Length: 140
Image (cartoon, rainbow, N blue to C red; front, side):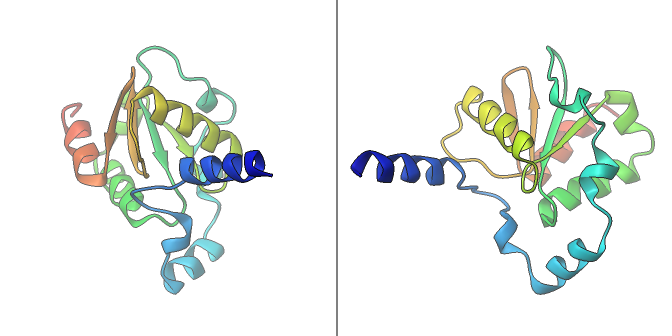
């Protein structure tokens, strides 16, 4: 029994996010995310988004996360940047495979706690909307 309880505690602790979590949405955000098209379908290429190679730039985000939306707005305002840098996007709130990859990369970056948004490249994680935007500006 203690082993089961301990395993559950470890799993729950590994899913604690310091940034956005799905449960911290305002009622308006929940309503908008429910009526909006699935961002995962819009923003993530199928199959190849889950293959992260050396030099790949990956944006981990969560549906309804306002910090993630700030990065998305920057990307949409920076015409052609996303295609230029070949950014891969992986949603982590609703996509179990995305969550698994996110947790692997958080561990690889030696982060004790992590939340979305995170920008990952070659074992380095940049966390938070403002630091990510500053990092992306270097690619302009």
